Length: 424
Image (tube, rainbow, N blue to C red):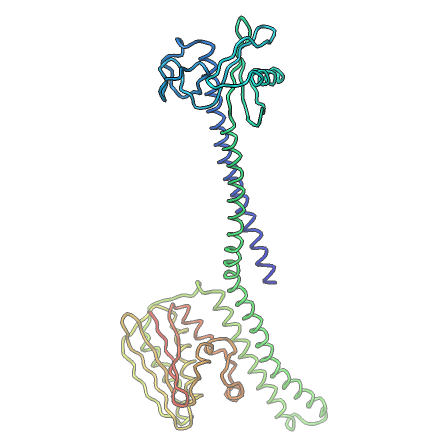
C-alpha cells in the first residue's frame, strides 16, 4: 500500500515538474527563436536596402546589419558610414527581367556555379523570401524588384540555426539530467513523507489489535459465566450470585476501557476546542492529594509532599487534575509494600514542574520511551493484577501535549521511578 502511495507521489511530482520544465524551456526557446529570426530579418533587409538604394541613401543608418559584398576591404569594424558593418556571410545577385544572372557581388570568393545554384534555389521557391540548404549551409534570401529585373540578397544563417539546434539539444540534456536528479530527490522525500503515515497506520493497527485483545478477555469471562448460569437455570439467584458478580465486574472493566478509549479519541479530535483559563495549580494538586489519602493509607506506604503555594497556569483545571490523579495513582499502585511516594510542585524558570516519585522495581531504560504509548505495559501480568490497561499514561501525555507541556520519566531499576510534568 505504501509502495503504491510512494509511486503515485513520484509520478505526480515528476509529471508536474516535467510540465513546468517543458513550459519553461519552450518559452525560452520561443523567445530565443523570435529574437534570432528578428535579427536575421533585420540584417537581410538592411543589406537589401543598401544594395537597392545605394551607399548614398544608406549613410548614417545604424550599423547593425550584415553588409553585402560591395563593402570596401579597408572598412573598420563599424563601417565607413555608407553601409552597415558585416556580421555574416552574404552576397547579392542581380537578374534581368527573364531571371538570367547578369551581375553578382560578394566580399568572399565563390564559384560561379555556387551563385547559379543559389539563384536557381531562390527562383525555384517562387516567393520574395525563403530559405534553403546548399552545400551543407543554411541560407535565407529576399527579392527586391527593380525596373531592370530583380536584386536577390542571400544571407548565411547556418550559425544562427546551429544556435537554435544546440539550444534544443541543451534543453533535452538538461531536462533528462534534471528528471534523473528529481527522481532520486523525490524518491528520498517521498519516503520521508510517507514515514509518518506508515508509523501512524502501524500504530492504528496496533491500537486496534490491543483494544481487541483487551476487550476479548472480559468478553470471554462474561460468556463463560453466562454459560454457567444457563447450565444451572433451575438454581436460585442467591446461589448464582458469584457468577453474576463476575459478569458485573468484567462489565465494569469494559466500561472503564471504552470510556478511556472514547476520551482519548475526543482529545485527539478536539485539541483546539478545549476551554482554557488561568487557575491555581497548587490548590488543584492539594485537592488530589486529599482525595488519594485514604488509598495511600490503605496501601500502607509512606507519603510526602512539597507543594509551593500560589503557582498558577493557563489551562483546563479538570484535565490537569486528571494527570495528577493518574500519576499519583500509578505511583501508589506500583510502590513496594512499606515503600514511599513523594509529590512535589515548584516553579522552574518560567514553568511549573510537577514530579511524582515512588520506590519500587523501577522501569528499564528500553521501556522509558514507550511507556506513554497506548496499551503499552512493561509487565503485562502485573499490570493486569493492578487492573490497568496501559491507557493512563497515554491519556496523561495527551493532556500535557494539549497544554503545550512536557511529560517524561526517569528511573533507577530496583530503586525508584519519577515522572515529571513541565507546564508553561
